[in-house]
Length: 284
Image (cartoon, rainbow, N blue to C red):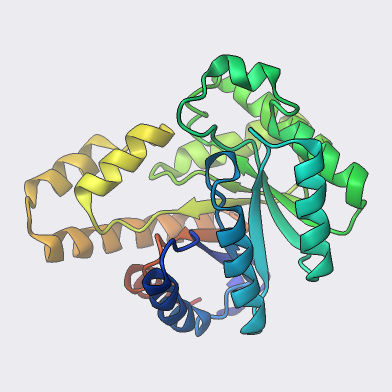
C-alpha cells in the first residue's frame, strides 16, 4: 500500500450465498480478494432479516479464515428481542464491527408497516445497539451523497444522516455513485451540522450495463449521461464495457482519494476481477 493511502480504510462487501455452490464460489472469490489485505469484509443482510443465518454463516467463514468481518444489521421488520439475540450472538463470536441500517421491508409490506414496527429509522437502531452493548461494536451507517430515494429533501437526508452519527455511529459507508462532487458536497454539509466521523466512499465497479441500470434505478444512484450513453453504445460488447468501466471507476477513486476521502468500500457482487483490477491500478 502506498504511503499516502496507508491510513485510509479499504473494505470489501459480499452478499450471503443461497446455495452450497454459491458458498464454494464465494470462498474462491474471497481467497483472491483477501490477497489485497482489505481492512475487513462486510456481509449484507436480506430484507426483513431474510438472510440472517446466511449472514452469520458467511461472517463466521470469514473469521475462520483469519479476516475481520462486519455483518450488516437491519431493523425494519425486526423486534428488540430478535435484535438483542443477534447482537448477543455476534458478541459471543467476537465480532467487533457492524454495519447498522434501516434496511428494506420484505415484499408485501407497505409504508404503514414501517410506522407500526418497533424501529422506523437507523438512528433508533444505533441507539439500541449502544444501549445494549456499550462500545463493544464499531458501528458503520449508510450515507447517500445523491439523497436516499425516500428522503423528503437533500437537507432532510443530511440531517437524518447526522442523527445516526449523534446516536453513536463511528463511521459511514456511502451508497455507490459516479459523481465525486456529490460526495464532497455531502461530506461538507454533514460536517457543518456536526458530523465528525469518516465517510467511506462506496464503489461499484462497472461490468454489466443492464445490471447497473437496474440497481441504480432501485437505489437512486444517478448514472451521468455521458457514462450511460457510452455504455449503451457498446451493446453486447462486454469487453469494451468492462474496459471503459475500469477507466471510469479508477479515475473516480483517484479523485476521491486525492480529495481527502478516508477510504473506499467495494461492492463486489461476489465477483473479484474488477475490484482486483481497480485496486491494482490505484496501487493500494
